Length: 427
Image 1 (cartoon, rainbow, N blue to C red):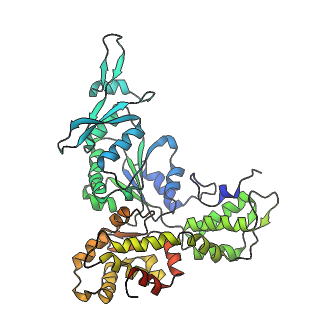
Image 2 (image 1 turned 120 degrees about the vertical axis):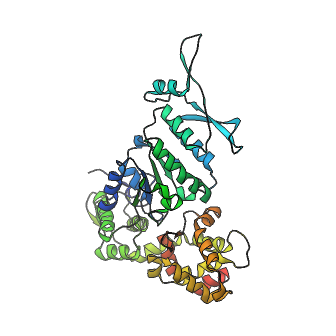
């Protein structure tokens, strides 16, 4: 029997967890979708296994990975893609039509590209030295805001992998919108496919940014974990460690986790350590603990308590001081709604009615101000460096969702009147 450390089985890992569970409705869909020659969107709440899903369904050699940052424009994104593809990138003195600097992409030493010389000579990337009659690879100058230039550069080296853009939701809204148009051109010009991973609760968010992407992208919802799937996560871990959790513990944990696979994994880890189980047992053991599953859940969530408190404070402050203080008041329906309502998401009408009941402007509150504030929720969280995001607004279905299940559990343990008082709103 192979011996595993408890930390290798349960808890959070940078790699795909050893007790990874295949979800038929999710994993099989992704495996099918990546064969369709379309861009793929993997979306869902934070810490619900989006990255692990990608790692399970794709080999490392199948893709290059770009971790998106909240200050990146098109230029930085293009630069990051080229670097991961094997180019050495420098800023050119030549200006684009928009008076921004072009990029110079040079072939890195040791880059192995299928058919490079044949393709390169056609695109002018390759020059020939008279002295040695050997082939030299000339730099490529390109406009980072032009998807055609990006395609030309990648095709010049025979690039044939997926491009994964992780944490796409952190990019500025303007960059996301511009890249939605990028994706359409890239799909038409080449066989290059992107896999976008984002904390969204909206299936067609990218299509909302550019309707022309309809039919050119497919979406995989990685958010839902069914009860039997969470049970399998626990049972796989039990098998690897040769232990057994009590049935009441497993039932309580799954119910109290609100469908969060992260909380299930982390709570199991802590329960094992509390029962002094640190690696695979030679003889099967029952995980003994005088504590209920709920206490481990509360312990896990409590560690994020300061982050949630900071989120409320920073979110309430908005982008800047305004007379309406919309973001402060938008928190009212979030804080005061039932957990079951928050799990389903708050509809626009529900939010509007709640605001009219408590906002100083009452029924005179302009609908446009409400819509504008809701639509900018992702941008505000990115600006405030709130990681991971806590809220997301689905513009297509006009629904506000909590995308951090830990926040829901934390909220259920808080004094709501005190939270409202802390951010300056009436409960």
